[in-house]
Length: 306
Length: 306
Image (cartoon, rainbow over all chains, first blue to last red):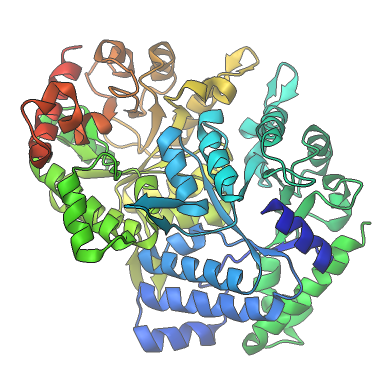
């Protein structure tokens, strides 16, 4: 799947992923109102509204981008109905030819991590019938539990040609509380980065590993160091746009081949219609066109660094 | 909710939690066969089988114990149908008066962590209607992202009188890869433990904080240190039994009041009927009676340390 991702990035010339992180607050009123009219003030209405909102955005941008990254928390908060919307979103995006990165940040140990890996990247076998879980192409993984937590994901990736992005240095302001602490003179995130490189060695695609890393756009100097520590890991970069990361800062995340990183924007795209920059040209009814305009602007912005 | 948990532990005299971590391999054949007969080789059959299996166990043990801990990964692997079984399990256990610890190990940043907290311990508001998520009483939380990832959970706990257990030192063999690394001469898990104590100060129940910790039974010396660092944190102790932790090792996890820790067993209880110790007395049809016998033995074993 890393090969497919790289091909799609080359083809679209867009090292960009759209974060499908819908919330009731970000969504245009008319979508919510319609769903409430049909299903009342229920989780089903929320799930329906979320999926319709996503579908309109995906229809408007799928030809421009290689991948999407639905954040499962935004669906999980609506219980089963929210997760039905998550699954429908994953399926629809795959139907449209997009690579789907499940931003699930799962991580546990042994058979439990294996169950998470099967849930998102694999399947369970019942009397020789393979039952697929949520069916994403990639998943994000939390490394705090060590190799025991990550290796079951690697096994499932190997079997199903899927991939993971391991949290190394996250984009938030308190990420340094633990991640930046010095161990033998070097920050923890570097040690995690080394492990990512090591885990990835056994699972190489054509030019990059199935095992990637998450490194926030908000810490470009650390991104530069981590790029060197994990030369074969694709870096998923959150924190661009709404969280303050700027394109000019992102060059160190890429390799000299112009590949090696994919930059995420969520609110900056899916709620573009609410931003001053787009709200004059696009009404809430045209939110998906605003998202398309924002994607075009983002691709141009990111590509300006090369 | 921490007060309720402490009361129930005192009332049952059982600092014990049963891990409801069903898998197809652990389950008696007749339960699976019946579900497959009704629903075919489908995820629905798996979900139904899981819930029926859980229900039989809960019916057999609920009067003996204060709490259960369903591991969501074991449900998530069956997709939506698995999560329906998770929700039904949570609801049924609450109906039976049990405290439910959702072993979800979630953790993200800002509004995303808030969404996870709402998903498991809170609700979302749609036009003044409160829509509850999965409705557990406690959730386990991964601290790798720092305070930004934990504080949204604390806010939701404060609002809804719920609680969390933060991963500090996990029970697996590779947990030391990152957690034991020395920072200014002290292991990372101690720094995380200090943060747990700090986070918990603002959210105290009568004698213990809403913010607890996960510390594996397999590292009793570390448990002893962490007990002192976090005197007001309830410690959720995995790793007893199947993972090798012994009762004799668990004393340091408790405070002098005989409280402060709750020990989990999953496979050791729910698959007791498969163990040599119980399989002569109990057939697979009587698996729930075997689970009851195993719970009684476990309570006796744990209480032997006092």
